[in-house]
Image (cartoon, rainbow, N blue to C red; front, top):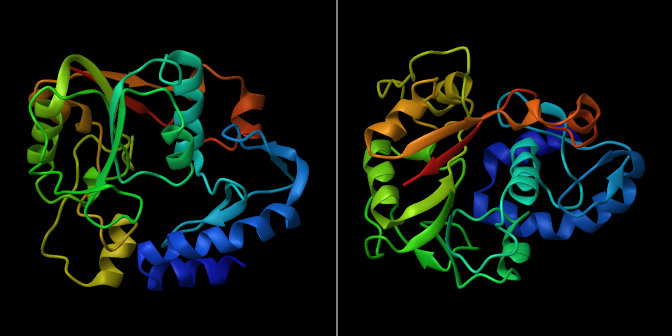
Length: 254
């Protein structure tokens, strides 16, 4: 199973992976049903989760039902328990919408819910994050998770996010981050895909973010809260929901 997942992740285009996942999900859900772990997004329980990862697969992290990962479940819990995201009529912009969230978010009582990306089949607006087709001060909330590590000019993208967010608005910009690294690492001279995958985790990642990620956000104007939400939860919840202990949720405010 692990080898098949690794081959699929590293060879199939992401839009095709998304489509295939819809076919595999009902089978996986039934096969792995149990009582040990819980996906908080849909409340379903399993005897184990699936492994996931491009270069270095992580064991027991991919939910069989929603196909959520640690970061998705952590974000869901934060939004559900600490915000009014699920109950207020916000104008929301969602980049590269995750399939664990997409249909659920579309049913919420938002004033508007716009999804955008260059390639995702779930995106309604095809757009470059560095040149967005939206007016200044348009959105109350922006979700842009695991996108910026793919963007060569991430500061330009951050500036665009700041531009289209309303004053007083907020958002969450999750990224893969090495919390032991002070300074973000980038090296455009590494062009071999296999070598980039070994160093950056995925061949299409252009950097490994360090702790200075938060300062990059502050430089374009955002106020930033570095939220370690796993520290708010109990150890049993962290294990039951299969979360990554110590993962930081970057909450941005304009």
